[in-house]
Amino acid sequence: MPTDRKPPRPGEIMLDFEPGTRGGPTLEFIGEIRSPWGPDDCPKNIGQARETGKPARVELRPEYAPALLGLEVGQPIILLFWMDRARRDLIRQAPRHADGLRGTFALRSPVRPNNISMSTVRITEIDHETGVIGIDAIDVLDHTPLLDIKPWLSRVDVPPGELT
Image 1 (cartoon, helix red, strand yellow):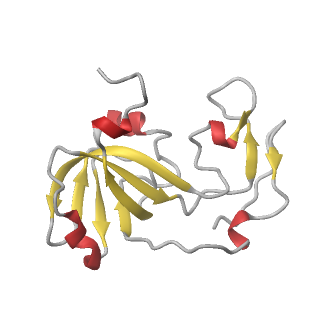
Image 2 (image 1 turned 45 degrees about the vertical axis):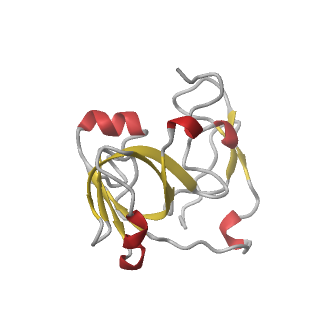
């Protein structure tokens, strides 16, 4: 949980509590994402990460390695992860890339009440025994906790009306 509560930008709305302190359901981290990125050089989105050509990897906890059965090199997967170093207290934000204010739920920003984020990546290598998956790119800080992996399925994951 971040310790710095930066003052909001003009027009932003800040919660008067820290969402992470309210309690509630727990989550199991199944591993972590290893990336080449630190706080000062992390790309802002997966497109920027791919442009760098820097690969990354997923390292599962050993007990979850058997769950990789059926995944293959070249396959797209959806990673769900916990942005553990992102702030959680803004519900209206002033993004630098857009004119005007946006509600948190209208943005892909890591700043949200629950720092759950996702990215669709492609498997470049996979070791079913050790639970290590090479991926084409990722836009998260090194050692970001991993919540889940789901296969990307064209018949399910394309919005209605966009199937070709």
